[in-house]
Structure formats: C-alpha cells, structure tokens
Length: 198
Image (tube, rainbow, N blue to C red; front, side, top):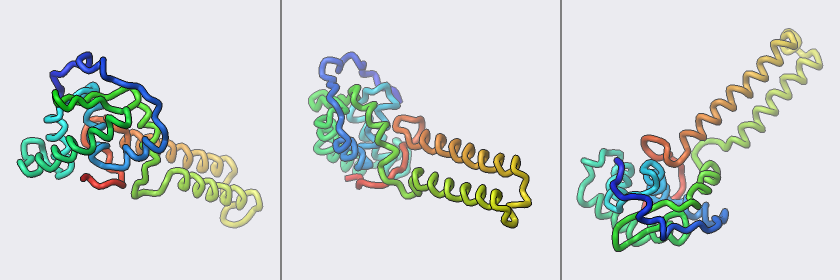
C-alpha cells in the first residue's frame, strides 16, 4: 500500500495557498476527489497515478484492487488524469506532476478536514440533533420543576444524571462519527453524499 516515491521528490513543487471555504466545498463535493485525498493521507501524502487509479476504482466498485477490470481502471484513469487531479492541483491541495505520474499532498490539504463534516450527508446534522436533545431535556427538567406527572416521581439527582448521561453519550457518538468521516483513516473512505464519481 505504501509507495516508493519519496515526499522530498516533490517538495519543490508543493504550494501552500490559503484555502477558501468555496474552494474547499467544491473540492470535497466530488466522491472521486475525496477518494484521492483519502488514499494520499494513508500513504504519507505521496502516490503514483497508477496506485490512485487502482484504489479509487476498487472503492467505487466495492472490490479489491486485484479485481479491478481494465474498463474500470481506464474510466477512473481518464477522469483523474483529465479532470480531478488538475482541479485538486489548481485548488492547491495536491501537486500533480503529470509527466512523472506523481501526486503529492500540499500543506493546504490539512485545511480540508475542517470542512469535511459539513459536506451534506444522508443523516441528520449534528447541530439539529443537539437542538432537539436540548429541547427534550429542557422539557424534562421543566416537568420535574413544575411537579407534573410522571416527572415529579423522579428524584432530582436521578433526573440530572439522566440529562448528563444523554449529553455525554451523544458527545461520544459525535466523536465516533467524526472519526469515521475523517479523510485518511485506515480502511475505505468515508461515504459522504454529494458529487458523482465522474
């Protein structure tokens, strides 16, 4: 999985431009570009185009790299070579040497992690979840304070413990979710929505 290409080979071409929010959203909106970044983060930031093609094609089709067909490889190669890698290079998050077939992350790529969690997903946004949880817990505490049944039957210490436990468990779940959605974690890339492969 590692590449024999040294990061120092591309150090002279690595750029570190400021990454705007619009550029970050545009770069992360496409699944293939997220796959490229995910793989590069797993390989110390440098990979050959051939390696990228194999892994992106495998992830797209849910198969191993050994099972990737010539047609699948060609389709991904064409898209990466002509569209996605130049776009990532223009965005300043990778340095793409088309002649040598080498792709390297720039320091600006680390800024993309800030934006990954806000790329739309199929699940409910965490901000709305916490608003809902806050409303639920406020109603629960108000019911206890007003002495309404069945809330008045719950001792205050137990009620407080339940609210605390709900927020603690939610925070743990949030951290776990964020770790799964982080580019470069071991295994397959996160399955965010948005952006076709091509």
